[in-house]
Length: 257
Ligand SMILES: NC(=O)c1ccc[n+]([C@@H]2O[C@H](COP(=O)([O-])OP(=O)(O)OC[C@H]3O[C@@H](n4cnc5c(N)ncnc54)[C@H](OP(=O)(O)O)[C@@H]3O)[C@@H](O)[C@H]2O)c1
Image (cartoon, rainbow, N blue to C red):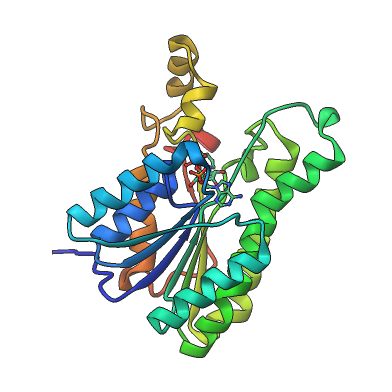
């Protein structure tokens, strides 16, 4: 029987409170990992964060929630260092933070450009730079970045989002080349049309939704759990020979619609 056992894995999910990140947090905890997940600390989401923690602990999982603006490099470093100090190491980083606002490129202001690159690219650099010293010291680490199919298709409707997510692929390639020999394996998953609030808001009416589903060869929208399952696999010993890979998780939509 193929099982995914992450017992003893000290894991940090940056942006792990809801949607895809929430499913990743849940799956890793269910596989036995000790998970710390971050959220923005937004007042309107406190109940959701508390509910996720309660649900995981009810199943016997080990989880902590930490408020973090992932664009704040100093605070990211202090969250990571505190976790490494308490746990002795950090085995796995999943960086899931991302934000998109569809509008024509001519309408993107300088402030927008900086802000969306901060959220979609620099936040990942902050997380990666903070965990690397701990992983290098342990000569072990797994890093999984969450990108977007926009990198291949130009979809998503925003130049700053597509550019930021494409930057993550370059970051992943660099990390593989420079750090795989130190025991740190990095991969990126590019989701597409995964049913989260973000997607539900974009495709509200039934007709638009049906049109979307018709473009997906697998015949359905993706579920956050589709991404979470692959994250758990890559983080487990089954993923020990997988490095430098971009996995498009889109039900075939990007190339075969
Ligand atoms: N859904 C899709 O079809 C799709 C397609 C392609 C790519 N993706 C990518 O997949 C990832 C997850 O998407 P999703 O649909 O699950 O998004 P979501 O529901 O909007 O969740 C985003 C997560 O990131 C956190 N976050 C946002 N900004 C942050 C910041 N500055 N600092 C720390 N945390 C922050 C949020 O925390 P709070 O709960 O506190 O706000 C939340 O946990 C994103 O990177 C997205 O770009 C999704």
